[in-house]
Image (cartoon, rainbow, N blue to C red):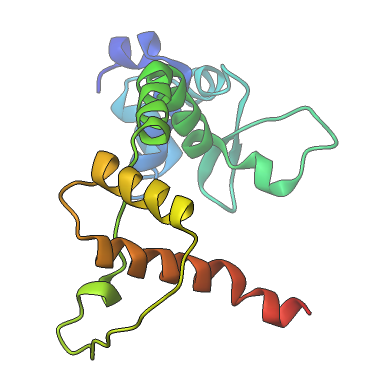
Length: 168
């Protein structure tokens, strides 16, 4: 990085690059490398409300809100993530929408366990419920066996209601 590049760089990016350099160099050495007086270098680094914390040997974003918690002061990583979300907001919305709209069914691995012991059971079921269940299975998941979908229904039921035992 040269002096012109340094001076024209976005303050957030500049701080990130300088903080990386500070891992192996001292502030005066970086200023000298950029062919700048230390005072000019320091003034440029403060643009964008950044301050140098000597004990951390890093620049941090200065927040003026007295009510901010310490966690909120975590600067560039948070800003970088927020910028990524802003840039990709439409794509992320599309991904979430597709996920919600798709009837993605993932069968529990216990259903296909090769060491599992299988048993035959007769279950008496209301005919209209069974017809609705089987037609939904055939329409939405024609590639899966009804017995596997029933097993998944059992797994879902166990998952949902076994935790209620602890609450009672």
